[in-house]
Image 1 (cartoon, rainbow, N blue to C red):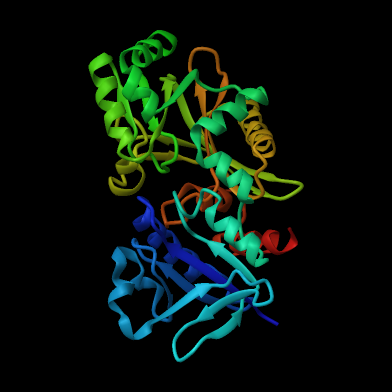
Image 2: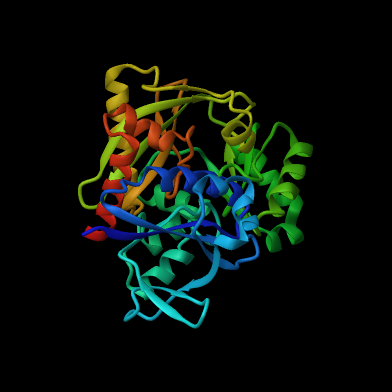
Length: 353
């Protein structure tokens, strides 16, 4: 008997549009012989609709123009429902076996949706509430990594309240501790949204003002000269790592444009590293995955420092991109697991957990 999977897409997030592209790919590649797919979109304003149309309509928000295929619905928090409530023509309960939240960034990747699904008692793909929240907050991630002895760049963090009252001292401390260049990041925005590279004090102040548009807390990190590598990890109790991929950004760093718009960044799979170093990076990815409490799937990004070869955690991504050009499915495809089989495994991990 086929299982019914609810694919969530969109969301109230700066990464709404990326989610639409990812979800379109996911929906088209879920094995139709094993699963019936129900598509639920969340608008930028937070309205929820079941969408009964073509998944090719998702990118650029075209699905919302297909009004004949839209139906108001919500995820029920009542465990006895174990699913959604369709609101058209009275309330109709529909059982869902497993949820795939293809929601990037805030209100989807940060533990909020995971918390709702925990209350509802519905299995879901990806990390649990706690791991999602920790990995979304870059300051919490860095603090956990320090506690677990995971090598990473030097960093400092502060919030908007502290900054407004003590800006000069905070910026001076960051410059002294980290040196230039400094990467300035909103603590809770994904996919390089709002991130800047500051090369001097004036640029540092401007970068902080830009990042505060996206979050009230910032993380500042020293610039690391080295190779950017990424590893796809999946599993629950016994996680497995993919081959290692290398990213050569087309821009000065791997920002939002380089990831999603320019399409000119170089990707090398496997990464151009010696075999022993590749093995060490894969092990580091599994170690970080376990230390941060991840389950289901996560893409773990590292720097391999040029000066000494140190493998340094950059960041985890608990709901990585699933577009046609995304690294997570590409890395497992290169490891011998094609896209549809990968999705089947992720859905299986969700129900097993």
